[in-house]
Image 1: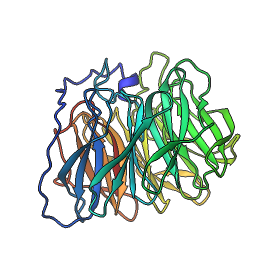
Image 2: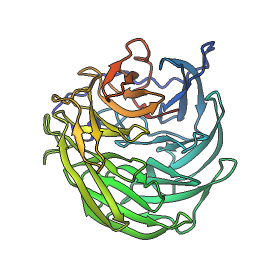
Image 3: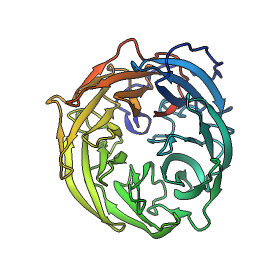
Image 4: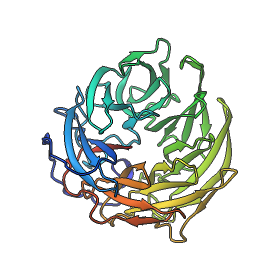
Length: 387
């Protein structure tokens, strides 16, 4: 998100490392895996890390995504897609999906028990510049950012192959530059929501049992300015980050927030918590714990993570008065997050690495200083997924 708006901060002089990393031997116990992607314009590669039981990461492999990434942002370098969920896992962690923004395609990968991946298929995204993905059951959707923006759906086969869903492509709100930040599908598979950052809109679609839209686009107002990242908990509450961007496209210092909503139908939204401040700058990505008790935002402009408790009604309460539940460092620029087995992982574009936090029973975060990686990714890196 920083690349889109933070003109008040100087872009860091980061080296553009486009290397394709080789495999590393790993003799540790397997706890799972963490994935990101280099998003290089020459060739997009998925970077695979073994995740040990203590949350620590060890390099495993890099696997071609079968397409091209966008490369660094043309102005700021970092955060070139300005979106959440460019890389996601299926509900059962059997499949990994990735956007290839530079070649307008989406790829699927088989995930084995050890976390290794094998590419299964690469198909057209149905539009221009795919930036975010959402999966529910055997349905996958992508949102494309350019050409007015659009969503397109796919059927995920039993072998992981992707087949375009005829009749699934729909426009966004109608804005010339809608700037989509995320696409999410409700737990019951009936409602799909896209955030539009510059228009301050949420775009809703009803989905049938076959995954094809039955309504939409329906446009509703965001509860706050610059809706960016979002996620549904398993009860259907939608947690949204609110970046708060001024008219000059500069983030309002310490002015971002998070909100929670429900969608009683696929054409209407009910606001629960309209705008609960992070007290930090530029809340972007959202991660909810699997038990639905806590939600976190990364604050790109403040180098921090803000945690919230999610009440029984879906109301949000900030966990710490100062909003700094976790600290990634002032110049770290945290982007995507992923949760796995009690650990929260944060991709940091400033440090070009991944920070690791243990999530405690009260939602507080403990930094695992030696568990992450630093200064190993190209400036174009984006996306994070974990199991």
